[in-house]
Length: 503
Image (cartoon, rainbow, N blue to C red; front, side, top):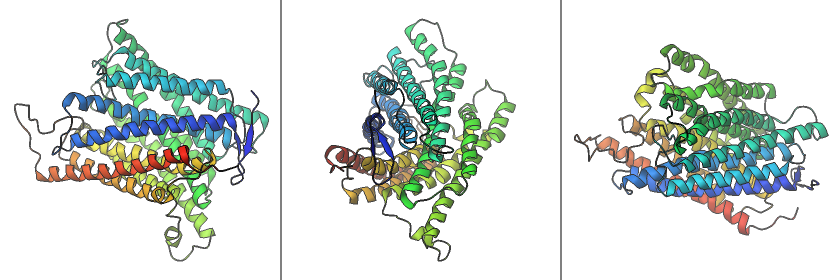
């Protein structure tokens, strides 16, 4: 199939038709799953808020399972496929290689996600996101995840093939752009992650079918977290690639030192998967010495990479602003930043949420001494809502406001709502995550349907402070859900009825 290009008059980028179409399909599908996950979040939030306690126990655990799959896997990975195609075909001004494999990626991921979601909804997979053995779901639950993972592997392969085609056809000069380099890091981590997913889910699927007699719970946990946590490390590399891109698109920033930033991405490739093991620090199957080396030394090489990016991205923005003449005092460059641009405000919320609220708590909770105290409390979901939702999701939301006119060729609908959306969503999530971590300090468990132990022999009372903090958490969550709805309204209405840009 001959490649067909158009040239964007604003950016000068060549946009190939196959890449454009696949970016559209993956991005729209990701937003559909965000909508599903957001509706589930509302129901779950009104259940965890003990004063409301909306859902019965069986529906709570069922929807909690689907919420994890929809948000942690489907919404983010579909969007990451769009990011990979953008960072390769669009940024390198080349054609998308083997587009039929790219359509295979999309088809397998859609079918796999649908099978898994339906299996959960009909009550045959109330095992939550981790699906720890010996909990057993229907075999179609695991089969759907396997199809989804195979589809994602195809997408990564298309990405690397496109890089090879661009190199062969010399569509760019010198090294690949930093954003593409970050996407390469995300793709390498993805291949390692999905390989571990195959290793753990294929035998689990066979176990659910009755083909093999048993699964060892400790082996399952070890292999699962090489998949389950490392999936979020793909997000980290993709998110930071979006940071650099948003800096360029919003204020025209250029990395102060590309070698510095590329070195940080390389550290992710080498060491970030090691961090997966902090989920196992209370497991008896791993030696204490191994746990101490993992959490006390090796994990911090990945933390170093995040600290390098946390310096590089704001520094690039500051330099770009100062070059525009905003040089009065220490912070005029920040004061005069384009705060009305939803791409820029999303960037700031993402950097601060991931770097401070999520990143610092992650390092603290990932130490062996504290992990045994916090690992089964609400502190942990408070942490990963800061990293994944404030960090990754807000970066993806910010990019969307530029993808809509560039790829979909539509003027963004409801610009006033678009400007407010990052502030509403970001503020709500900051309150929600902080309150959740605070509540976890009282020992409130992370997954229990009823925290009072009303049906237990010994009821538990956490006190009025915990009750007030739960109410604050609920209010923050409701505000964030409104912010998420604003994003979906803008994105969907722009795609459906936005004014066509003729270019």
